[in-house]
Length: 341
Image 1 (tube, rainbow, N blue to C red):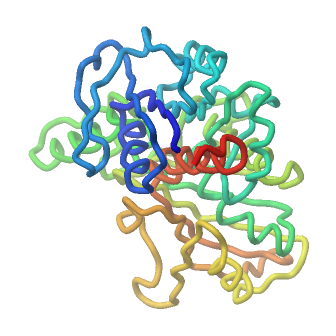
Image 2: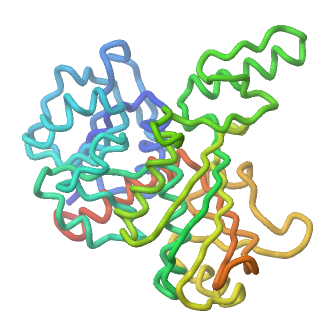
């Protein structure tokens, strides 16, 4: 026996990826509904490569009763309206927006890192999916934290334009084309030209000079992994279509050699270690697209601090950073609580 699942925001980048991953992982479904805003009502959408198609329903009129799980990819404003309705109707919401992440009554889950935290979901019947850059980082950090206790993390991100949605991807494509033919490359979605450029600005600026994206990485890492870990981040948008990269500097309480760190990461759930100290012996964003794993490369010791390590981390932000993690949470929820399948 399977589950009755709703994908909300099914026509967006993340929603489509959720459908692909549900199909790829053969998630046990008894029924599936795809919902989106009124402008997409009646559109047909593919269920992965199964050959099945589903008609998009209007989220404004959708009846949530009788459904087990809803995967939300509709942004904070719409989530604020519809998540409480779904949860009140008995449908457990797994939300990809930032709305509930820091709510103390809502678990923030990365299944490889803090699966036990899901046990608190019944307070609101809502589970939060972390920020894309946080999700891949904590998958790489958790096994090292368990082995030698992380004190401090300094991370610089190189985040793809798909993190800004379809409009971000379109802008990179259009600006690149315009530059080649000599046309203007005026920014619309981003604050500056993104083609052949990098922008050290993601989300809004806060009073302390950090951006909200950087703040998310700090507070979410603490909630998911350990409130004692100190984190500072610089988040940068780069002209890559899909795949976030991170250069992570780690300070540990206890000694851990690069060789031992490699051994730990090689066996860690969700991690794929590709670390050859030679030309091409590392993973780049282009190679991670469509993959489930969080890739780690260039593990080395940092001689400037006691018990320091440095590593390079790459993942498909539409997958582990969003859709895959949401589906993994649904699988975890089924195993630990719903237990139908």
